[in-house]
Length: 390
Ligand code: KIV
Ligand code: ZN
Image (cartoon, rainbow, N blue to C red; front, side, top):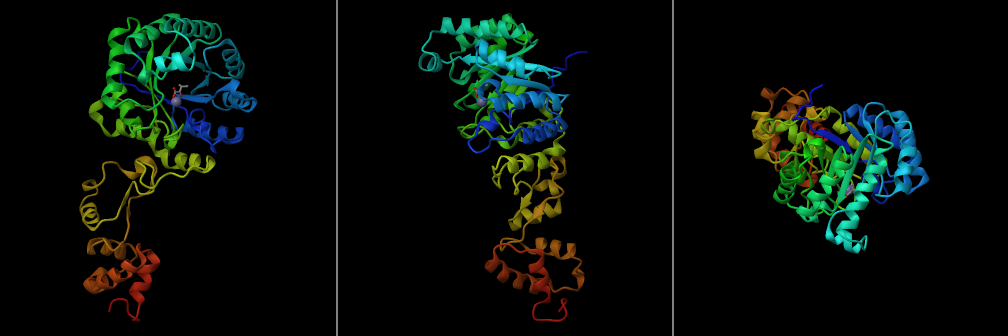
């Protein structure tokens, strides 16, 4: 089969990088439920855990490997034999196993985390890939803290691990330091300076410390990466990871990018709620795509424009992300058009209503109550009168 150059592979790490968040730990049955939902969503890779880290994590990787058949199941390791042996054992039932091994690439990590040198780190990286390759064909290598690494050394490392057998090279912005143009240029630099780069897929893995994880991932994809690592609701260490729903909706909405995934975006609302509930991690109301206000309109000017034509104020269709309909929230900022919309929706014959009069009463109530519910409208219409049309 010919490889589609515009296909972006989605690597979900909700159950590994996401699950590292304090308070978000899951039991194996919960992980299996999320993994099945990720499979239905159409992700290409599920990072199931870090098997050496605990017996529970090891067992989860075993059980997820049995429960899910379509996506690749990936296990994380550091660049040492013990971690890799543990991952190989945990992946024994996976139909499509992948080992994700790696080591620090920035001078900061090399000096202060490993107390080592670039030469020795390079050797360890190559050894780890060669060792893992004896057991599993699909090897992803991560160059930790690549965001702050020197590009010349990073290119040397990437070239060496591809030569050793890596099929995917992950360029993490571990600390969420890069700006989109810097991260995009880094990916382009690797594309242009690593001789064997076409023998592997470049993967982007961005953290959100400066709030630009999604923008950085997009910059990487535009510059040639073809795998994006992300989590549902953007959960992850510190400020989180690239949000799966954001990056995939960007690709779906901007056709000119000519990049596509296998994601069935209609599942977003459901899987977002599932992950939020199981991980006890509420989604902020104004979160892009899946926040409860993402398709809610509350100012009078926007409501009026929206009611004239949905696309005046919506760039996506709520149904495309599994939300039944947009919301017109009635507040003291709403105009007559929005009130009329709700009165009609509740079955009132608008021609028989003195809308100005009802609107004046509505404003008084809205100032008092902040938001107006259907019940409020019903009582407003019957207030002080037997005939709602008076
Ligand atoms: O952020 C990071 O560098 C990671 C690696 C372990 C891939 O999560
Ligand atoms: Zn990470």
